[in-house]
Image (cartoon, protein in one colour):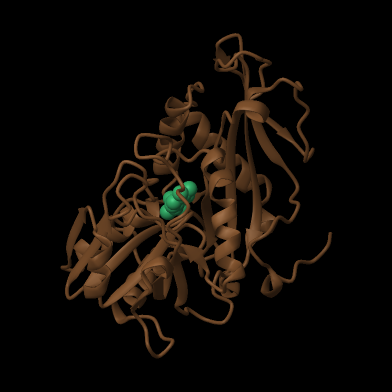
Length: 339
Ligand SMILES: *Cc1c(COP(=O)(O)O)cnc(C)c1O
C-alpha cells in the first residue's frame, strides 16, 4: 500500500479505494452498491449532459486527537440535496440513504482520513444526476447518485490570511428567481468566466451583487459573504444565494458568543462600515477578505491593512475548527462520529 504525504495535499482529486452508488429506476431508488470503478457509463442522451440536471454536495470528515472520525453536519447536507432535487425536478434521496452512503464511503476509505496533526481532512463529494435519455426538455426517468471521497490539505497552507476580492458588474452568477438557492452544476458553469477573469487579475474570488438591481451583496462565487461591525455578524439575505451550512453554523456560534446576528439585504455601500469581512464555506471554513475592489466605481473597501485576519474572524474560525476536530465539545449536535 502506498504511503500518502499528508503535508503536500492540495484541494484536488486523489483516487481512493471505493465509491458508493444508488440508481433510480422504475420510480424507486435501489440498494447501495460499493465499487472501485472511477467511471460511469451513461446514455448519450442523459439529461445531465444536455440540460444540466445535476446537483452536488460537499462535506468533510475529520480525525480527532482521540483517533475518532467526525463528520460535520451530515443531516444538513442531506436536506440541502433534497432541496436541490426539488429545484431541478430530480427524485429526492431519503435522509437515511444519504447518511448510510456517507458513512459507508468514509469507512471503506478510512485509510485516507488524514491524521489529526496534518490539519488535513477527508472531503466527501455526493453528486446526483439524470441519466435517463430524453431529447425533449423534460426531467429524466433514471438517475444515479454517487459519493466519492478524497483527502484534502489544509486550505491555508501559509496560515490563515486575508485575500482580495473583486466586484465585476458585467457578470451575474444566478438570477433572482433562478437556481441560485440550489447547489446545481449549472450555477458553477455560469460563474467560470468571471472567476477566471478575477484570478487573472490577482483576486481570489468574485463578490457578486444581486443580479436585478446591482445594489446588494449576494455571495462570493462558491462561498457566502459576511461582515463584522462591532459586535454584529451581518450576512446577506437574497433569493439567489446558496444557503451555506458553514454560514449557518457561524451564525449559531456568533450568537452563542453573545454577538448579534443580522441576516438581511446588505447594500454595497455598507461595506464601508465593516470592521472585518469574510467568505465562508466547507473548503476553507472562513477566508478572511483583505479588500473588495469595485472596479467600475473605482472604489476599494479595505478590511485588513496589515495582512492579518480580524480578531472576530479568527475567533469564529478557531471555534468551528475545534468542534470539527473534536478539540471542543459539540454542544450543538453537529457531529456524527463514525463507529
Ligand atoms: C456550496 C456552496 C457554498 C458553501 O456552502 P457550505 O455548505 O458552507 O459548504 C456557498 N455558495 C455556493 C454557491 C455553494 O455552492
